[in-house]
Image (tube, rainbow over all chains, first blue to last red; front, side):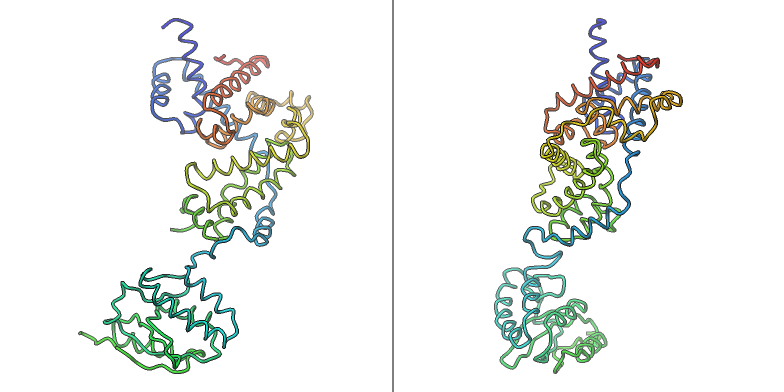
Length: 222
Length: 188
C-alpha cells in the first residue's frame, strides 16, 4: 500500500469512527474499521480522539437544559388538539356506534339501539367477535348453541354507556335483541353453575336492569 | 408489556389509534434530545421550546401515516429539522453564528476565564460548538443522537456521500483547531 493509499484509507476510517462508536456501523464498513483497529498502531490513538469528541459532544448537548415544566405545558396543548379523525384509543367500530347512541336521550337511544343491533347482528357474522373497549357482540366463533345465557330487559331510562361498561367489565356479550318487548339475549361467561348464578345475580343487582330471566346454565361436572 | 419496555413503534401505533397517553410517553422519551437538537440548530432556546412542542403535536397528527421505514427518533429529528428551518426562514434570520452557538452550551464564562480553566476536554467542547452549523449538526447527530450515516442523510435530506464528506471535514477541522491550540493529535 502506497503512502497516498494509506492516507486515503486512514481518512476513510477516521470518517467512519463516529459511527463505529455509536454502534450504527455494519457490514463491510464495520469489518474494515475493526480490521484497521486491529492492524494499525495509529488506529487506537484515533479511536481515543473520537471517544473524546463523543464525550465533548454529549457534554455540549447536555449543557442545554429543557424547561422543567415542558411536559405539563405540552399535555395542555395536546388536550386542546383534536388530531386527525380517528376512533378513540382501542375503540372498535361497534363501540364507537354505541358511544354515539349513549349520548342520545334515553327514549331515542333505545329506539336507535334496537335498529343498530339488527345491523350489528348481521355484521357480527361478517366481523366475528367485533371487540370494543367496552363490550363485545357475540360473533360467529362463539358457539351460541352451547353457551350459557340469560334474558335481560333493561329499564327504559337506562344509559347505554353504563350498560356497555358493565358488559365489558364482566365479559358479557349481546347475542341478540332487543325483541319487540325489549329483551336482550346475553351470553354468560361461566363454566360452573356458581359462576353463572353470581353473574346473573350481578346483572339483576344493576340499577339499569329491569328484569333478568335465567337461560342455559352450566351443569357442574357435566 | 409495560410502558418502559414498549418500543417507540408500538407507542406510535397507539398514538395512531388516538391514545394521548402514548404521545406523552414518547414526549418523555425524546423531548430533551429534540429540544437540544433544535436549540443547537436555531441558537434559541425559546424557539427550541416552541418547536419541540410542535414536533410532538405533529407526531399526534401524523402518527397514522407513519410507515415505520425509519426509527421513530430519526423521524422526529427530521420533523424537528424541517420546523427549525421553516422557523428560521420565517424570522428571516440566518444561521446562528459560532459565538452565539458556543454561548448556548458554554454558559457565561469570559474568554479569559475559558482560557485559564480550559483543559483539552473543555477546549474540544468549545471547538465542537464553534464548528460551522452543517459540520456541527452531523457531529451532534452521530455522537449525541446515535444516528447512522443513512439516518443522518434522512434527517438532513442529503445523500449518504455528503454525510460522510461533512463528517470528514468536521473531524478534520476539530483536529486542526486542537493542533492550533497546542494539543497534539494524530490526525489530520
